[in-house]
Length: 333
Ligand code: TXA
Ligand code: MG
Picture 1 (cartoon, rainbow, N blue to C red):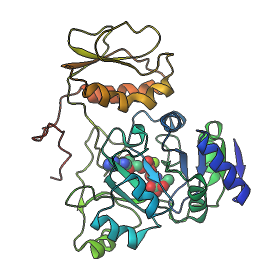
Picture 2: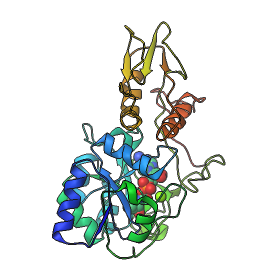
Picture 3: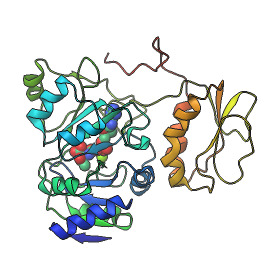
Picture 4: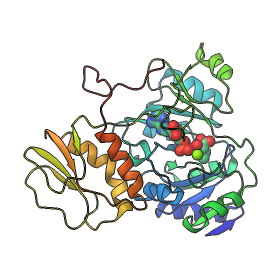
């Protein structure tokens, strides 16, 4: 790990490292971000490994400007009003993902939407322009610790796992961006932040609806909407072999041979690779026409904790489904 002052050279190096699939920590106006190329699943999986995060939350894709946002997402009328008023700045918009978007499915946790943010910090902007790709970046701290607002926090928390930290001084705002979901008719405030509900209301004509409070069993995401892709097939965990009619999600070199729909998350048993492939594999097998989805045991170490957490959620009883068989998204009470 190296710490560098912002300069054209350090920013070019950071961009090169990101394109190589490495992790780079960089300042934004809210908190320091732990960045990875959002188009590389393996790089995004490394974020979770570095943070020691036991769950896969969808991440924010950071881009340089609204044009770059439009390359990955559909920016509707309400979103455009907010983007024009508050970008660049501490506002994240959850938008419908553009078909064929290059965003790795681990960034969105398999959802059809993507959270997009255009930060205003000059170092973040220069870096995003230099990378020329969306950068997934949660706050640069270990899971469960407070967000990092200085390069020293980042180094203390994540030193060993980041290739480069760009030291832009203390983050000005110190709390994460406001998140508004404008992917549906009624805008939802998913996370309060520096852009206030009043300021949003001024642009939207009405205040965004507050999102449902976090469930009691998810204290790590207070006030945040947890919205996750759920397969439509019933999921059977810890399956050593598939049963008649099932699709099989395998892991490691000892997967049984199978004539039916089969994907191996990582034939060589690498959990980072498995994490990167997880959501895309779930989607593929979910659409395979099988009557169920059987999943091989995944080791519970390292990223295996997050993978198993996600698989247990996928196997848990389902929320109500709408007429199209899609899981209904959480509603405000
Ligand atoms: O200020 C910030 O936003 C910082 C800096 C580094 O930019 N980033 C940050 O990212 O806080 P992160 O990944 O920790 O926050 C992501 C949150 C998730 O917890 C989730 O609640 C929400 O954004 N989110 C992301 N994608 C979503 C989606 N498609 N639908 C709903 N919520 C989403
Ligand atoms: Mg955080």
